[in-house]
Length: 398
Image (cartoon, rainbow, N blue to C red; front, side, top):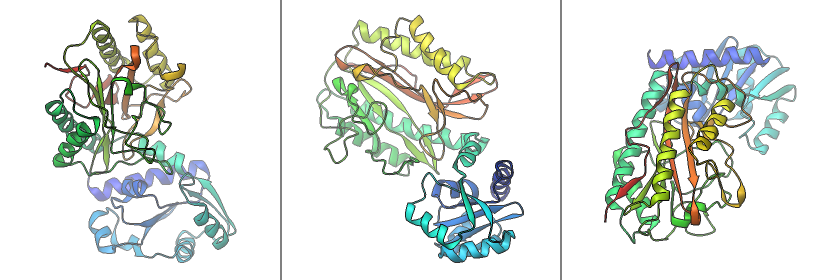
């Protein structure tokens, strides 16, 4: 399928979703949504209605025309929201009364108040759930892009193994990973659909640092270098016999790989060997069993049942203080965290074409732990991991 056909087909899918939701038009400005529907992230606003679509461009019209699959007659240079709304109203034949879908999860309050003053007869509703539901199912090109991103993430993991040694700091390990990923094509950024989200470019935690959770994210966060960014690698040195978690994503051509492995300097003790075998087996079982016909909650409960069967139930997804991580995986795509959340309350149906980051860990004694995270595409016959590095503890002999 050509670039233009892909983008126009996606816009047609949004148009159908708007009709089902009772919305007359969508007005989208967020960069990842613009990339999905137009192929460009130049600042602008995309209008989609029953009879057409139009992209109003704040940046370079020439660059948008080169990147976008939209015909040239549907591109207009315009920065002023008032003029955008006025032109859109006339193009769509809306009049002064309309039900308008916007990305209300991210739209600044000041923008929204301005929009309401400009068009007092428009009723605004949140179109983000429609957009994310459509983006949740990946096409072959998107899956190929995330496979490429996995290869870039793996380049970082190989560099980590080469650099790993007793006494190296978490920060130095992170730098080795990030350098290798950038050289392999990582675009140097990852995207989260959250206001004021902050973290280092990824996370490293060694020894008792596996139990670090500073509140920036639900799962293991690492300590970071200071209270200014209390997440990511610290200057803690790696010690022999203490697992090291490397959870550093990569992003290529807009698509992410959320990827983690655990490493060890020296040989594992019996506790680590048992945990390694159990966690690896849970990953195998989940890939074999996940398929349409289940709910996401079914998958979550199955993973916990498998952990209990293997004698690893107490530490599975456990967090300090007796808490339990309320998911075993999440969607990935143009943003690092997307629907679905594979958790106990998600009764949505498992669907082919979803790409998940299966994110599972065991919290062990003395704050130690093991975590693997890998990209899995759901297919009719089950799940298929996109990476080539085994989901096992990776040991470096002394």
